[in-house]
Image 1: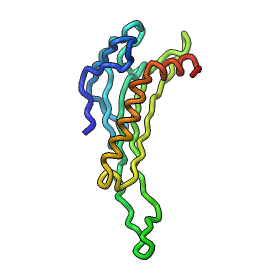
Image 2 (image 1 turned 60 degrees about the vertical axis):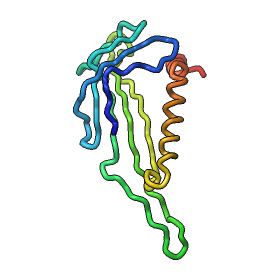
Image 3 (image 1 turned 180 degrees about the horizontal axis):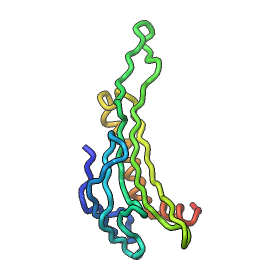
Image 4 (image 1 turned 135 degrees about the horizontal axis):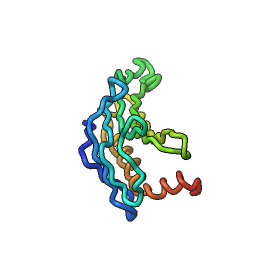
Length: 153
């Protein structure tokens, strides 16, 4: 189950201890779950504000509306002609100002594409792929932020 609990602490190692309090929100899709940040404490950045209509700050998890099942291999060749995929999406939206008069939106999106059948036949591979992906992002969070801010690796 995907269910955020509040508060959420950042993974910005050595930089700060930012805390985000979240509340359940209505996802824009019936096959999604969404939370809105209703209180935020970002050390060193007092201008960061919680969710509002003008400055959304939400986290959404969207699953496929219809989950696909594993394809059956060809009875003669034993080859599976194509493997259907289940695509999940995780989105964080943060309203921001780009200058003194213009608001815009920061979107952080991750797509998770799982071949149908892997959830039953190789669940360890599914978890390992997700663990590496999240672990690398956690480990390099300040580096990712620096690249997004400066444009330099």
